[in-house]
Amino acid sequence: MSSDAAASLDALRERIDQLDNDILHLISERARCAQEVAEVKLDEDPGTRFYRPEREAQVLRRIMAMNKGPLSDEEMARLFREVMSACLALEQPVKVAYLGPEGTFTQQAALKHFGESAVSLPMAAIDEVFREVEAGAVNYGVVPVENSTEGVVNHTLDTFLESSIRIAGEVVLRIHHHLLVGENTRRDKISRIYSHPQSFAQCRKWLDAHYPHAERVAVASNAEASRLVKTEWHSAAIAGDMAGKLYDLEVIHEKVEDRPDNSTRFLIIGNRDAPFSGSDKTSLVVAMRNQPGALHDLLEPFHRHRIDMTRLETRPSRSGVWNYVFFIDFVGHHDEPHIAAMLDEVRLRAADLKVLGSYPQGVL
Ligand SMILES: O=C(O)C(=O)C[C@]1(C(=O)O)C=C[C@@H](O)C=C1
Image (tube, rainbow, N blue to C red; front, side, top):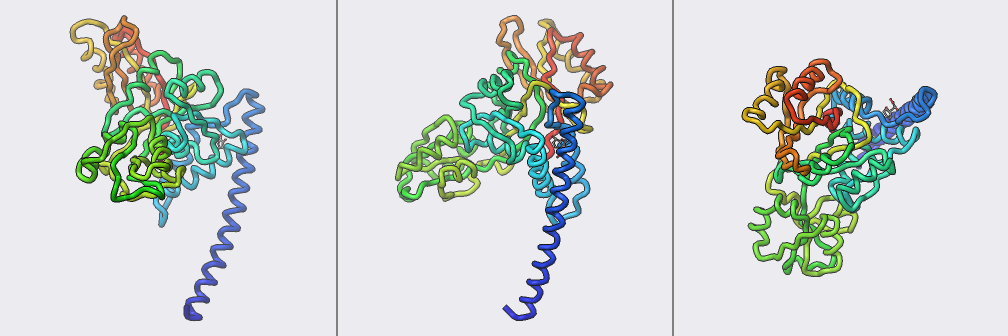
């Protein structure tokens, strides 16, 4: 390196050191503010909740709107997400149950939403996540609800029918699958591939083209698939980054999903939903009256109030009393007057209606 270049590098690093000092000072000051916020909350109500989803969404949205680069809005929000997560942990760490085992996309979604300072606990099944939240053993739960390639996760929707759980948030995760091997795997001799059935479905064309003769073995999770290949010299796994890192596997083919926009939406479930944040969604489940024109009647108020419906799913009712129920997501919060008025109208036309929750639209 020339002496000029070395001098420039030294000067730039000195500037970075100064900036780091400022950032350190400011983050500490922010953390002290969060501690004071906790005291105010406790003074007001000893049973207070420290985690405030609507406030977190507002903070992240404001940062993204103010960001002028060179870091992208998403990257900047991710950094602030972690700062807030650490500040909340000073107030009280948030405990989150997720559909495990460790290394699943659901864990990745939980950490994306709550940040790395959250305490995340793996559960063996979706019902268990619901149960832990209902019992108050954790503050929140994270469950998958729909995939852009494979459609809805019926089990999650069905569990809502029998539960008093509320939806407090949503998070969308871009899903990238890789073909992973262990250090002893003979790459030219891969005869078996492990993965979760949903992941196989999302990578079917790629597998047909590249590994048409390999046996596809469906297992309970991608993390389980990754664990299995560790000890088998002729096997590979289809899984995401987290599972691969957890079991120290090597990526031999990156991003093998058939659709580049493959993403999964997860719900944050809790014992109460979220206050108005300024950009919200509401989820409800409705049972239709058993009469001609009932579906049209039910949906008409959405149309008249110009409500943006983002999802409509039909599921067979489990109670036997109703034939079908509809899961509806739309833009707006149930505390907004026009939404409350629309809901009153729909309630009158339905056999039954349950608001599952209003919550901030996914920010990251
Ligand atoms: O504003 C609050 O209520 C806070 O507790 C502060 C803060 C933050 O760090 O900005 C931390 C946790 C909450 O979930 C929301 C925001």
